[in-house]
Image (cartoon, rainbow, N blue to C red; front, side, top):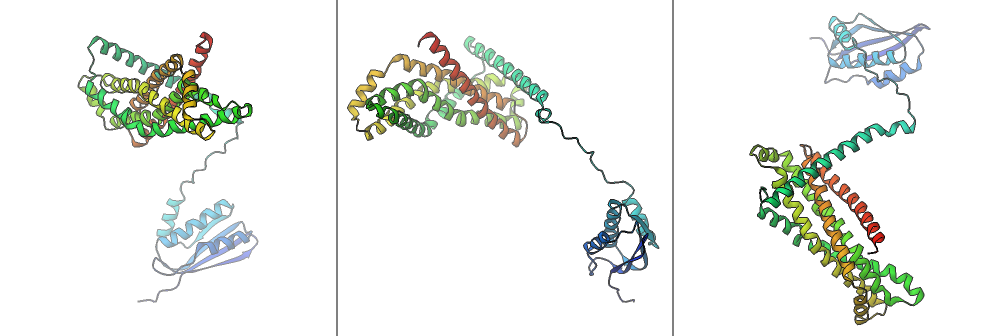
Length: 377
């Protein structure tokens, strides 16, 4: 049995036009063999247009040799050096021919487009039109389902409505309490900074009462419900879409809009005015806490706030709450019903529900304020 020979290589430059790479020893796994980086550095130095690979002194070999030769071939190709093997074993020659038969794919160089061409305006327009079509179709289905509910021919169940009312109402009390008190305190503080310059700190009560009843109470409640309940609706319906539960409901001849969407919309529309009233109360209390720090007694704050209190301001906030509740529920349910059938799609649907709901809230709030200003309310 012959003794194993160590694997090694030697690179010699014979003349200006040729270099010879001699491979010796046994190139097999489990034995020490040269690192190709050594040969790569030497090849980068020589300037010969041809490399002759001499394997006459080669012993046993396996994939270690093939990997070494293939790296050498690729470097020669990249540097425009002609690769010329000499006395390769038949197996190595066949494998090398197979490995180098197809050139590696190189993507075509892309010309850098101007910034306006990278905006993909056509794709954005198509996406906007597709989303608009889905939204209008969904609103149409909800309208038909609500009409059937009024006629008593709907598959909507009262027990589902009651469950969603509990989820959207009592379960949201804690977060609504925290945000409402803090928003009332912030509103009072911002007003106090300006009113103190004129010695009119007492009017902080007017600012807090009117601002909370007409705007901040309902708007902050709606934003919280969009992030809490709207995203929950999208996640619930998206998960049902992934598990093919909605397909099963359709197979049984039941409208998923009547059975799943309508109870959620009605529950949020009913609970939003109640949550808004609760948020208004806590917002006024939060403003009173700041007013107390300015030397305004609770009795003075209550008397001044009572003068600013009006059913008009209260009704404006309650009307907004009904509209905001419907918009949040529609955004969440539409995102869930149109969700894809994967866990990633459910997450995207929940995110989309929150973003779209907040956009709806801002647009609706601005439109309602403009209309009320024009009619003098």
